[in-house]
Length: 207
Image 1 (cartoon, rainbow, N blue to C red):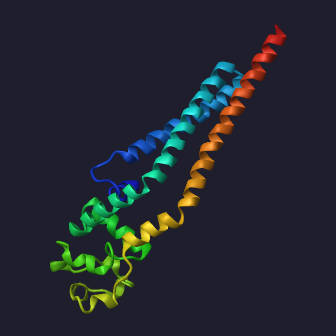
Image 2 (tube, rainbow, N blue to C red):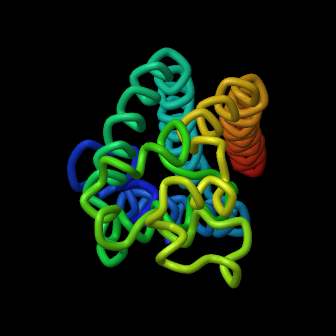
């Protein structure tokens, strides 16, 4: 699911989907490990779990800060890759499908507007892609190839402006959610350490 969209924000092929899947799997496994450690009442297992949470916290913190600091680079990369995807659109490859999905879902067309398609390799023989149409049932290839008729059939707002304005407008919310999730890991780490100390203290008292 993520592959096509990630291809629009990466200059080259990326393994990001696999990294995300792997990271999610590791977090689930260690979450289960934390539950097991709590049930067993094992101090060293709880400390190991706390160490893992601290690493996750640091990774999320670094990722959040990096995303905020390098947001302009992300916008620049998206502009380059999306422009390239539009110019080399063929309606078949992964990048082309991502462009279609983006245009259809966000109700936008082209990089800056529908005229971005005039320079694509797809336009001379096929016109503007149907994913730009207000109503797909009211669009035909002849109209989409006609520079005079096409504007009345397609969205006028460009996808680049729509995506980047969304990023800028919601940057504070995105940052807040990111740091909120990160600090939830910190709370879990502190609770695991406290529980480990309590269990250790009780073991000494029993001895």
